[in-house]
Amino acid sequence: MDLPLPKPSFNPNKHLKEEFVSNLTGSSMLEIATLTVSIPILVLIRHSISITGASLKKKNDDAPSGNRNLKSYLATLSLDFLVIVVPMLLFFTVLANWTYFLASLFTILTLLYIAVKRSGGSSPSFEGESNSLRAYVTSYRVIVMIITFLCILAVDFRIFPRRYAKTETYGTSLMDLGVGAFVLANSLVSRQARNITSVSWKTAIVSTSPLIILGFLRLVTTTGVDYQVHVGEYGVHWNFFFTLAAVSILTSFINISPQYSGVIGSLVLVGYQFCLVQGLNHYLLSNERGMDIISQNKEGIFSIFGYWGMYLLGVHLGNYLIFGSHSSGFRSSRWVRMRVWVLSILFWLLTVLLDRHVERISRRTCNLPYVTMVVADNLQLMLSQSVP
Image 1: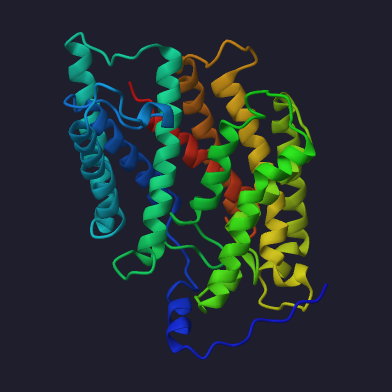
Image 2: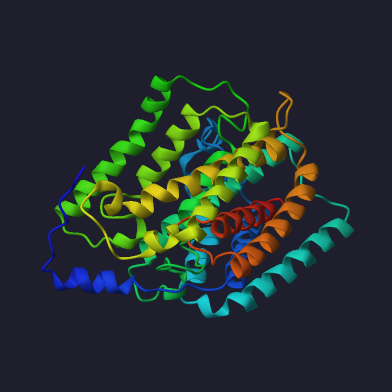
């Protein structure tokens, strides 16, 4: 199917904005890991404030109860915003050059706080291991959402460091983690990870239709207002919502047991990486595009294999770490912490080896080093939520 190429824009501001987010090389894995340490500590600080209850809970727990008036609810919401969102925004902007110092300071203070609390004979009170683990996972998913929203809103301003914006071809940056973190966060608590019987094709398409509609709405609106869209990110017509929809449809149609999804996902990723190093990466990263729909959206279409493999890997991790093979609920939080520590370190080491000896990290192609980096960083982020 041949599609017409988009008409050239005569809006000079559009080209300036496209250049502002183009040809970027990103930051370093060390800085990304350091940010991942700093941000969750804000949530720990919020939880340590005893004047209000924790607000990062499931939607059912977020709604004010009958004996909780509007004033206290707004006070809780304001406190969450001041303690978590505002400092996080400062980390990404005016305090970006102080990342290592702030991470070191926050880590030391957190360790001192834990030591003092333990020496005093007190420990965090939870309703139970299952509930505490559920709170950790929920906090992790909320943090992923907040980071994504703040970066999307801040990237168009000069105060947002260019090294945090999405890379052009190879490299690591904070915004590169966005779509991967969304895919992994969804897979960890997905229907497949909970070992729930797969739904029918009709149900799967209906449940995915909102993503498809959002994808077309974004395409129509950005084209209609002549908004700047970096074609090298997903392609001419493709976008983030289409990627999520494609992964969801693939996972629903190809029913894989969570016990084997890790193996299948690894095989998909290794096979896709083999194709990349055999020359597919040169095709995907080149600026040459044909008139057909696949060529115009080559980055978005081919990267589906990488994101699908990541999703399957996340399903296996979610089943293994969180839900387990039994139906009694969640694993114990202590059991999870020990294994997440080990897995996070192993995936970071694997990322370094792949980045140096196989292919550099590329979000644009969603190659194997990118997948392992996303998994390592998100495990680290989830682990930081569960510091006792």
